[in-house]
Image 1: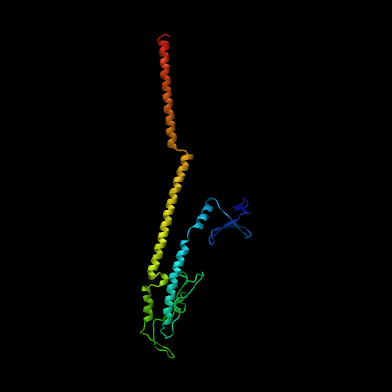
Image 2: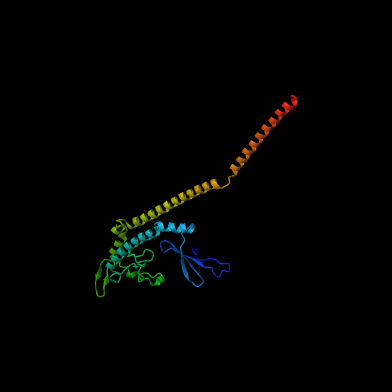
Length: 257
């Protein structure tokens, strides 16, 4: 493969094939027993065609991931802002309700890794949960010390619930559920379009294969027709000669010529 031996008869010179899809175009390489990695270039055949296609198509997964990160970022930011402005059941100013993580460095909080603040909810041990730290109130009876909570105030909790009806500009002035549904519609449309293209491609391949077979292949039906035509032609010629032979026999023997 591109000058690299993949398999040998004794197995000693065999190498493993590696595929890296983190680059554009996709990079193929081989690794030998000494862990030496050598890049290889494939421009022909099925592998080369797949690499070429992968380098020219849009990545719907990356687009959807960015969309989900935008949704998560807005939700985390809005909830944390409200929660930090409230007071918990001990009368203490609130803290972040969600942990904020930006592992891919795109400037957005990650949709696939954010979680509830571990001081409020410990997924490893529910006995360590502390719901008293949920800042549901917008006011407290007294700042203290010690601070006296307003246990009848749940304004922050209601404000967080009302975020479901908000329309932030960052998500196209849509509600959170509308923005999410629009993403599902987009990816569904993309999948449908790709499936249709794949079906069209299969039809083209079938047509080309049929054309190739028509030019170079053997059709049993056509061969049978040709054999029948040859047989009929032979029978017709044989009958003609039999007729001519009878006429000559009549002329020579019958008329005494």
